[in-house]
Length: 446
Image (tube, rainbow, N blue to C red; front, side):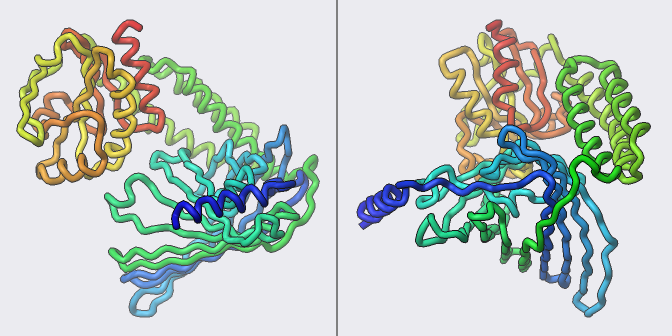
């Protein structure tokens, strides 16, 4: 029966593919898209309600990429279990995003938590994907989300598409995150979303939420004569891009404040030329944040560099199955020590990246070893059973972590073939496998 249904679906896709072109968004420069969103949440503490006005200014369409400035205005209230109502303060946020006609985001910068993809879901590339479903992985956040899309139409040629989207993360089952579902209605002839409905229920916390966004109207504006506020907000987001580029060009081993002075100069110049108070305040907040980030990052860099060339603290430890491991056993190999514990979501996210590296260097003198610090071995065991890393872990404990001066997780120590620390890496990023590979190649002399 299953094989028959698969063949039937494939046949349907092939039949609908004749002359079929997947719909695309059509955002014309000089148009302003107005939307209204609502959300309601109920839990054991009461309920909250909010209304969000979304205004999209389509600035350009260059090379098949839309550039859109968005402003959101939030107003809401809460009602506690005694029936007392509290009004929330009015909040305004901005976002500048760049998007392909299929809904793929190329750039997404925000001053507030805005889900762009929620109103502009990814569209399928062809009829086969439209019939069988399609998937998108969002890596814009440290915790990546996987979106699975399904077209709930009898025909891909319908003028109104009903697209269902489910969202999941790698840690949903570990941390009890509830399933998140939404449905979008797309006008394929106009190339515009009409509305979106979403909801989720968390049985553990007895929380239930529902929300929706509706297209209100599409109007015109003069791109060449934008209000000064809009020009300053566009400038603000472009300044953010320049700041990222400046940090990207900096030497990761530089313990001076040179790059921070250059970035501060970029931000100060922006504040001087801007006129809008909102944009200026955002820049000033970034300057303050820069000072706090400078202190933390430079301290982290100095901590990392102080280890270079020093012998790694020795140890002899057991794994979960009672197997014995000692630092001296890895002489002649480059060893990566991954300090982790179950309650650290970034540690869990790092494991697949480290597994990728373990497989990549399987035929070279490289070893990866997890250094678990959970006080309960049951936590360590359940995490390993869930994540199934492609390398072993030992029960290292917090005392040994102190000897390695580990203060954040995950922390990776790279130890050379002679048992000396070659480098230290702090934290998780979605590029961890690439970053670690470069460090290993440097230590191996490749």
